Length: 156
Image (cartoon, rainbow, N blue to C red):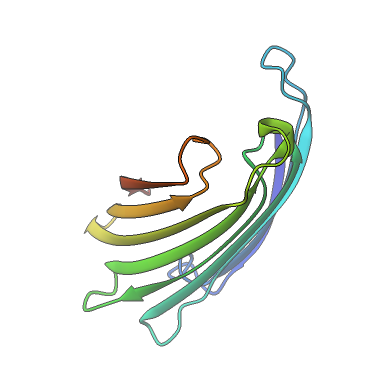
């Protein structure tokens, strides 16, 4: 697996809130796992507005390599309430399942998420979330599923 990323941040202090990144990757064939080689690109954008609003966008394209999605577009908005660190947010995603991984004629997958990120320590955050997936690529027996999740981030 090889990748290269170029990006821009407005300052180290706002590295997570003001940034643009472009990533390109390539993966070799994995014969044991029966996965072909592949490549892809990803674009990411965040911009803090008025010290309260954080719109974001992500786009990804892949060709082979065992990817779950051939194309993916995510957009969303975070809101910093009273604390400048806790964030209430919503995200929407459209994804086209990878034909090489799942086969032809799958419907596009749509996801909606609501989350609340709590900064519990200077370097630790916890994010409970609720997601709704429509046409989930990994569960063809269901038209819609709900997922309740909990993420954690530790930085140093």
